[in-house]
Image (cartoon, rainbow, N blue to C red; front, side, top):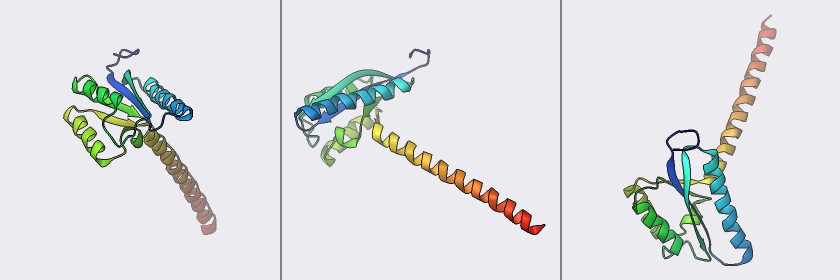
Length: 149
């Protein structure tokens, strides 16, 4: 249950960078913050774990926190993984295939923060275009109505 008494699904956040330099370590903290913010804005999710692999390539599944997250998924209590974008989780088709297999088997969905942001921007542009088109159409109707008189 979440704060509002609704049933909520457990989710985990995952972050990764491939080098251990200071700038990228900050990137992991930012990635986790974005995931945490997303979960807080959506009462249907409860963030119940954070997994961070610093300085490890996403092309391998030999990542301590990635492995721990997979083991947690196999326990059966996680329904969602939240990550900033696809390449934070996987950078090879082999690892992607492995993760997708595990997710399908345990009915886990993946939420990518960047993809949601992109879709919101895209929907906003689409709505703006529709609004402009509709207002243009009504202007044309009033012009043609005046011409008919």
